[in-house]
Image (cartoon, rainbow, N blue to C red; front, side, top):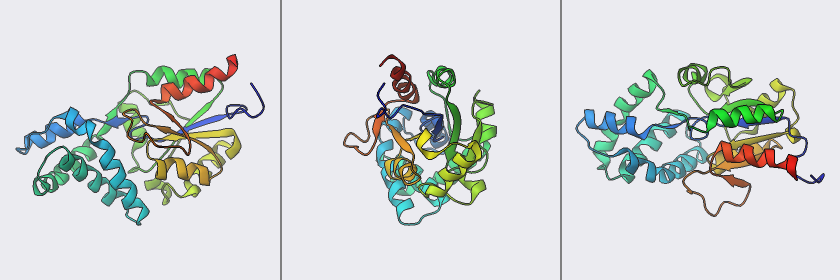
Length: 237
């Protein structure tokens, strides 16, 4: 492995939460919709999530708060899947109640636990940096990821959110790791990749459904497992 290899000397892998470690349970979204007389299929919601991500990106760029961005994300998802806009808007409060009961971003990829174990075997320390609502440790415990991460840095508790580089700097400081020795992975380019780069870190885009085929500002992977495999392959170079 050459000195220029970006994998050289990595000490920490920091991850986004939603749609990187835990994914939106679109079947649960569809179930809430059906309970209120709206029929939409979970797979149909999954296929249009890219549009919801782009609306969320634009909202944050214009200064929107996390809660309004969350509501816009779900509204866009439903409308893009064919739900009439007024009906979609009527579902947001019930979806928010379901989310408050158990975070709707709760589906763990089957290959994630092994990938995290592999990362630890490679000597990487693991953490999460997320724009969320302050209850990630409870969610992780519920889905079998309790204790998987050394730190969890949540925007709701920090008072600062991605893409502000400050939230990444706080995570690095708490781990006593320099930005040059860490890589961050998330699913939204302007929020995750740009924010991590602004903090001086390497970054990777997690894009399992190919929503960002033209992304060029970082490496792009289909999963955390694929990213960890790329990091691990450095030892054989």
